[in-house]
Image (cartoon, rainbow, N blue to C red; front, top):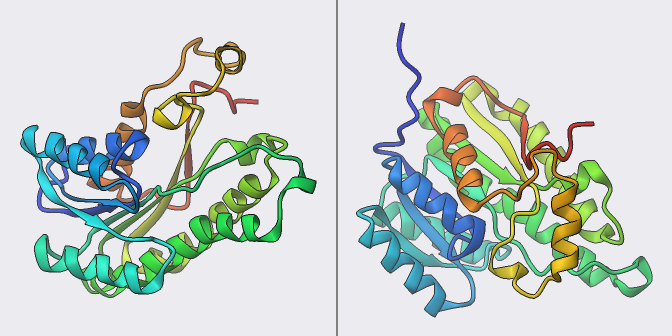
Length: 254
């Protein structure tokens, strides 16, 4: 019997929003597993270059690529660059996200709702459509969406983000069935609240309140997400599709 393979040697991965936080942890995990990783960023070139320097210093292979992942032309340009430099894309991890303020519905406008839908539905659509020709030809591919526990919890006042994450989950489930005949899997990883750079200004009281609700009694760390994503990208997960893996210490076990 063949031993399940968790390595990603020879695979090319694109991870959006990977210059910091959870995306950075995913990139390092996949790089350590042998993948050539395209680390995508949109704004902070200095942060991205620092991350890529660390990535290369660890001995991992890949590239840094700037693109706004909700812009069709920039997505096409990004994938074209990756194909020319690293090879055809085997793995996509859709992680980039905008700011996520909690507001009552009266304080949102439709433009904000639209931005959320752009990041969590339009971006997966654009990127997946762009990489599908190679994946279908190869009869192999991994599409991994980073979703969130907030959809299962109905967190409020957070309607724009929660609604868009629900749409992303529905899109992923439908695409899992559509692409299964080509042996392309579409899965999701739903992180709990794992404090990273974007949470630097969150209050200690808020963090402690969440921590108390974690059955395992402690916060997760970014490498927890990196491990889950690497597993789903590997051959060990080749018969898993359409699922959402919560990585939150049991918060959504009800």
